[in-house]
Length: 66
Image (cartoon, rainbow, N blue to C red; front, side, top):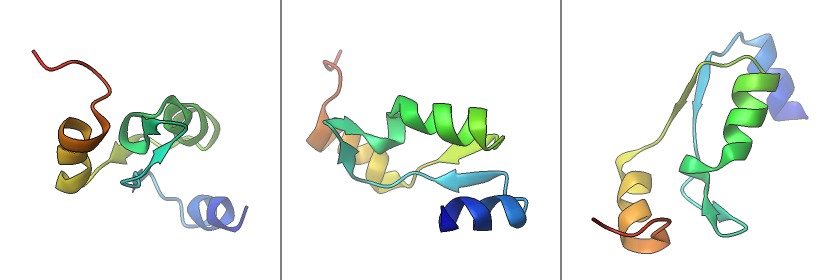
């Protein structure tokens, strides 16, 4: 709740996703981010650092490699 208040009161437009996974889905691609951040909080940017992108391939492997 406090994070949401700070987000909204500062008129933030985006955030960076965490590097962990929730229920086996990496947060950098988790649908809850779109549902909450974009739909409910009216943000328009969700970014990720290079480590999270590398983790998708090396650790999480959410889809088969080509």
